Length: 510
Image 1 (cartoon, rainbow, N blue to C red):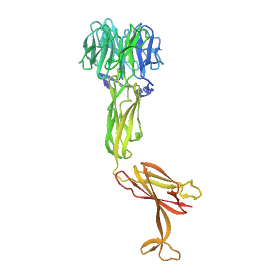
Image 2 (spheres, rainbow, N blue to C red):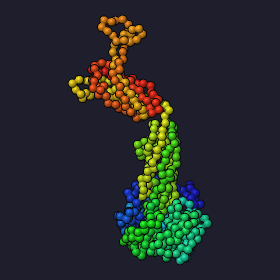
Image 3 (tube, rainbow, N blue to C red):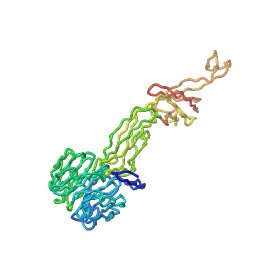
Image 4 (tube, rainbow, N blue to C red):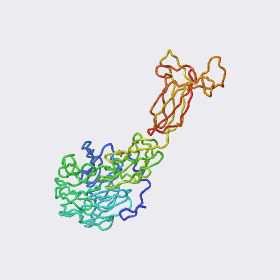
């Protein structure tokens, strides 16, 4: 059970499965063609226009998306909310039955909302995301409500009329019809983490105010009678019924293009795919000991006016195995408009030095996949260690006639990055004389036998933590090793000068 806007609701356990949809290859916008029976769609760059993505609607006026489904309000005929998959499949024209023809529609993590007027009284109504638990009079509004928007804490709606207003409420408590006053016949409403936007039909403008009600601008954008408005992380979109167009402008109001998309049939409601704005956008973990850990929380903020569906959280980059998710609220349910979810990441380095990766959030957002660069420096005060070492094959067949002798491979596994020195020594018979092993000479039989080790060469190679392979041709410089018994003394030195215990491996040349 979850307390949400003063209501106790149960989030369905299957919601994670329902969100397992692929993110859009490109951001899309959607609009309701109220002069026809269709819901239109296009890519957010204005390409791929489809005026009839969904057909069979009755004068649709409002539209909303949540990363999984598209919802629309039937403005004509009997009261209904329709729903379909984002690709236009699985159409259900009567997903929810309303008490009167709805005018606006919005959706959050748990519910679908709409505005309607019954017997002269306006209300915001809602139902659960599966169409059940319908409440036809959740919030009172003015007598002619139009658009509606929701965020994790509040609802906003347009009280139509000239003058009209933008209303606001915290759940079903203390509705304020005059959150923004002096609006000329508002309809579409959209909210983001920072601002609330509205379409002022009689004022020929898009208005804007901060979510706390300050900095109200009634004419943020001057437009011919807009009906709907939607916002993502980069642009503002609006619909103009009289011209049958969809417009677009930058978030600061510059670069307005009222004819961004043409050919719509009196469009009103409009929605756009969500966008992600992570915080922090990148992170450098503090210096961490190998085998230890350091944690950081990332807030995956929905910066658009549509809910966000996160379908997967993963890691990418050369050292992605050094990062792990230890907590994730993003996959629990859809993230509401202007809300966010949290992913907790732990840096658990497996090797010394600078480590690099990225947290990858795959979602319904227009900028999915969203990568958050991660870095960290790992230290290991322990000297390097050889976990394994061998010469393969242990017997080399070399010939001075062939410069392409098959040779051998030094195979070894290191605990950390280090510089490895291979000292190659030849074993020969000797005798102990005066306490030292000396070369045996013909006819000398005094002293006990011993093995004399003569250094014939040395090789050096930078190696990484984990398995390594060093090819050995059987030559030291230009000189081919002669027949006999040899050993390789391997030693490793890390960046701090810490030296490993040597590791000895042996081979023969025949």
